Length: 110
Length: 116
Image (cartoon, rainbow over all chains, first blue to last red; front, top):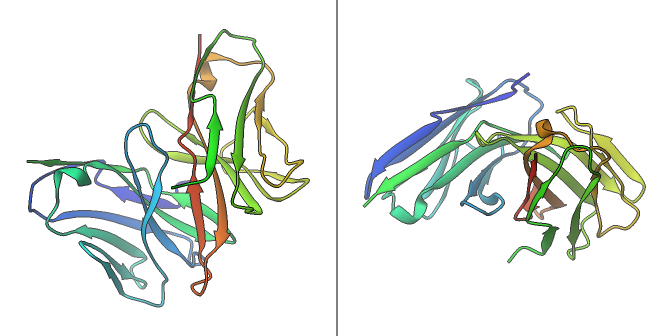
């Protein structure tokens, strides 16, 4: 049972554009929603995270928007750069266990 | 830089062989995890441990086994490897961040297993 659904599977953006990745979850017990970034040959690394009592969190060019009633959250990457090209995973946590979305392969063209 | 180490990084082995993937962390984290990552990217939790002598199966059924005899060490073993076990295996450990109380995972670089 897929508890966190992520879209799109792949995304191509021009340099300077906005990248948007969406996730939806089912379990209302989830209490922490991180995004992880993975480069080829590396393990995922925490990028940014949000609690469900906050509707938006911004760190530099990265912003999470959270809609508790719709059970959806999204990652926005402003002014996307070629160095942002990576695989992005949303996740949801409950009781110290993370459930990941399917991943989005982002390519930022120069 | 992450202080969690996985060996080997790459392993090609024949069917029926026993293999052990090593994972060690120097951060003193109590919680450790094994994820299996499909070629199509998706991460599946296969084992986790909340401390020494504590291990649990994850969301994805796996024929592998794990042990947690020391806090810093969480090896994964396959008694008889099969081609269906070909995958990337990622080890992680976590701590509860303050003041958010969030469970933050730190991943190793992964072990890519190919069973012929």
